[in-house]
Amino acid sequence: MKLFVLCLALGLCSCSTTSFDPRLNGRWISNREQTLAAAFPQNGAAARKSTLDVKTMEQILGKLRLTFDGNQVTTQYEDRVETFTYKVVTRGDDFALIETRSDGSRVRQRIEFTKNKQGYWAETPMGYKEKFDKVAAP
Image (cartoon, rainbow, N blue to C red; front, side, top):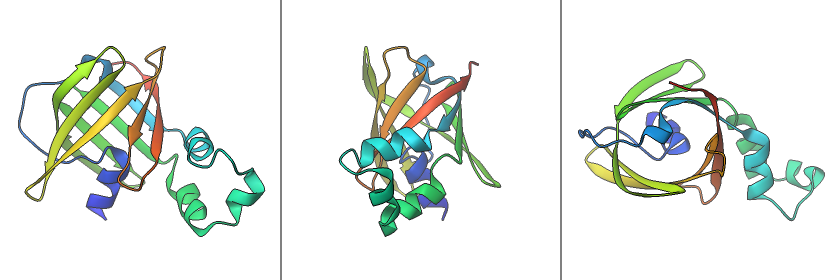
């Protein structure tokens, strides 16, 4: 379950580094509605509700909270709280590619910032992008 929550959050786990992206600093929360709308753009709400995968996503999305502080990220999913480190592999004006390690394997994830930098889209291992909204600055 630990790995699943981290994959859902960022596809990330621990690694040691001092490289971080200050745009990530602050508290973020999963945006359930925008993630579902982007994952199933051609289907209406009624069609989405009949899909088992969508029902599972509806139960999971919107509960994950992330807090970035320097090169650390704290994940909170329901009653589970864990803190990890991450490093930035590369970054641009509207994205950051970050890397963590979990159980000896490295995981990289691309984060695409919204134009106002108050949100970002993160790739997930399940094949869709999850939207996160900034709820507090550092």
